[in-house]
Image (cartoon, rainbow over all chains, first blue to last red):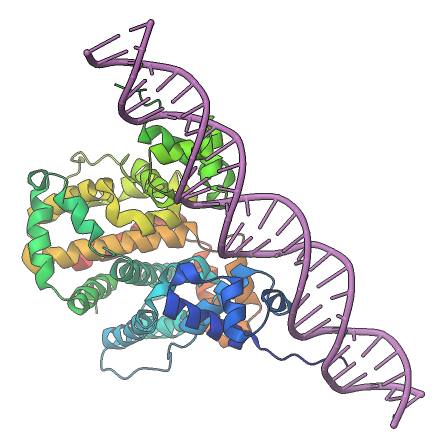
Length: 204
Length: 204
DNA sequence: CTCGTAGGCGTACGGCATACACCTACGATT
DNA sequence: AATCGTAGGTGTATGCCGTACGCCTACGAG
C-alpha cells in the first residue's frame, strides 16, 4: 500500500563491495555505502539491521558467485581441484574482502552450495560417514587458510622485515626455505598444497 | 636521566589480552586497555605507536607462548602433530583473539620459531627444496583454516540456521553429513584432517 | 640542589554506528 | 479525483572510537 522500496539488498552489497574494492576494507562504513548509493546513511537501516549484515551481504555476493556446476575432469581429484580453484579465483578477485569471508563464512548460502557440490564428488570417490566429514572439513580448512596466507600475508614485506631483524642465524631452515620460496610461484604453492590434501584423503 | 618507564610492552599485551578474554574482541580499545592498567589512554602511546601495534603484541603474547622444544614421538608425523597440537591449544585458550592472529600472524616471531621447529622435523622426514616449502605452507594453511573453522564457526548455531532455512532437500549431502558431523568430536575432526595433510605430504 | 628529559594526562577533533522523531511519497480505498 | 495510512527517506543527536597536541611534573644525572 505505501511507498515502494527503491533498493534491494543486492544493490547494497554491490555498493559496499565497490567501496571495498576501491578504497579498502577500512573504508567500509555505513556512510560510505550510503554515499555510494546516493542516499543518507540512515536509509540503509530500512534494508539491513546493522553493519554486520552489510558485511554478510558482501561475503554472500562474492562467495555466491562461485560456479558450482559439475566441473569437467577425468578424476575426482581433478574435479575437486576445479571447484577449489574457482573459489580461490572468486576471492582473489576481491582480495580486500578476505578478512570478512571468515567472520561471515558460516552464514553464506554460497559456501553451502559449494560444499554440497564438493561432497557429491567426494562421495563418488568412495568416501562416506565420518571419513567424508573429516575430508570436507580438512579441505575447507586448507582452502580457508591458504587463501588467507596468500592474501593477507607479508603485506608490503613486513614479514620479511621480522625475519631479517631477528638474527637469521637462529633460523637456518627458515632462511634456506625463504630462498626456495621465492622460486615457487603462488599458483604452484596453492595447488601443490591442495594436492597434498587430496592425496592424503583416500587411497584410490 | 629523566623519569623511568613504568610499563613494559608485555604488561600492555597482558592487559589487552585480559580485556579480550573477559569482554570479547569488540571491547578491545585503547581506553579499555588503559583502564585495565590504571592509566590514561594517551599514556599508552608512549609505548606503542597505535592500536595495531597493541593487537600485534597480543598475538605475539599468545603465539609466542607455544612450546617449540623438540617434542617426543617415535615418528616425524607424531612430532609434527605434537607441535601443531600445541599451537592449536594455545590459540584455543584464547578463542577471541583468533581473528587477530591472521591479521598479525606475519609479524609474530613466535610463528617464526614454530615454523623453524616444524621445518626441522620435515627435513628429517626427507623433505627438501620446493617440496618442503609447499609442505610447510600447506601445513600452515591447514592449521590456520582449521583453527578458524573451530572457533569462529557457527557462533551460537547461526550456521545451522542457514542450513535449516534453506530447503534441506536441495542439499542432500550436507544434510546427511551434518548428521555424521554431530558424531565426530572436534578433536577427532582436527587431528583427522591433520593426518590427511601429513599422509599426503610424503611417502615414508 | 638544580635542571633537562621524557612520562603521564586533559582536552579536543573528526569519524564511526545507530536510536529517534519527523516529513513525505505513494498506492489502495472511497 | 480526493483521501489516508503506511512505510521510505532524512536530520539530528548520542556516545563511542583512535589519536594529535600541549601541558605539568616526577625523576635521575650533574
